[in-house]
Length: 584
View 1 (cartoon, rainbow, N blue to C red):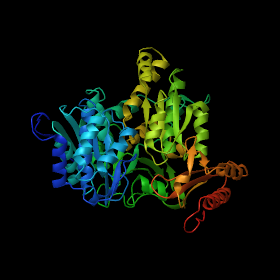
View 2: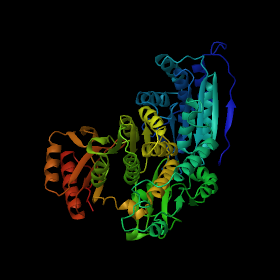
View 3: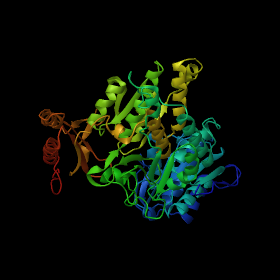
View 4: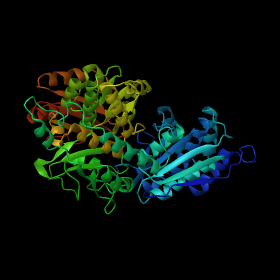
């Protein structure tokens, strides 16, 4: 698996046995080995902490401490810690905590993480003690912390700092997964919490589950209404039988020179036996995320280095394998991107078709998008799922994930390819009952349950997503051209406008409406009203003094004009800084 799983057992001393308070002891260890000194302060956000790797030692140690406290506060449930900076350059690194069921750290704990990270060396012990009292963490409970890391050169020693931190708050048990994708860590956490109900809590268990689920799903036959089953009244049996499938079970996968190569490598031979041929590229011979990876492909709208998709479809993972995009056509004008919006709608189409095929009703199937989803994708989603089942959430997977919980089958993907599908307990109970019934309904319900097995519900997972895409394309008998033809994206632009103070901007309606500065939205509405299929919104950046402007319209010309008009308006109303952007 590219890394050896290990279990490190620290001495299990009771907090009451020694004469030194465990928080004070942890502070002394940190001061000796991982001092903060005069390092700048950091803030914990959706992606955890991220920065240049050489300034993160103390942060990693303290996040190990925080993970141990979180575990004790939850009665000894296991907490995960992932050392990665995802799609960032090799010189960066980061850390984020994972909840027992594989969820992200609760929002209210983000402030606690920031507090612990930024405490002075001298006050750290007192900060830890107050925090443990605040969250009612019993110091005598054995903390359990599981750590994974990506392939960055800085990751091994930073992961060790996490393990040291978690082990400093005795009693504690720490476990290292070694090299692991972020989704693999989330998977292991859910398996541990469900006592193996979700799968074996190991990296090999993850591989076994993914391969078995893919093989079972793809062996179950094409969906009714797919191109494989679509025959006309004049189609002879012989002609139908000899029909050449559009789906070709072969693709090239760009691993971004990251940990995805370690996770996918052992699967290649087994997937070939299941009927899927994968050729891995950018497996570690080059720089991480440099000229490759999902983020590069999405932003640059071009195929990555060392990949030629002129005669084969391609897929790109990002550095920690939680983002996925597809593409085909080769270089230049022939290049076609299939991003997160397309992934979500492929899955929505397949599931909706299965439910129609079986005459199934009851579970609510829906899709969660953000304001950045292309208007054409939203229109198509509404035609497939119904307007009431297409929801909009604030930007960020944590907001999308929360919104998807309101659905029985909740699909969410950001345009960057980060997302997953959630299946409610209500859906599972319904599907189990339907599976026992004879006829088309029972067959369709079984296929839905097989599809669920391919999905990593804990978090967005590029490898799980890739297998789900390939299964859907095969069962629908779609080529990439068929997939792309579901709708045509509206021309769009995203522009950053530097402003003096981004905090004067406030938004509502999932960031689609600007409520401050007062009157700005009314002026934007006037500009949009004069443009066919026009849409525009502005939102402040969460990390820098810029306002992000999004515009789309029926033509490129109209998009550029609308974009420039909105940029001019924002620049004037918000005291723009520097040169005013020119939209092109």
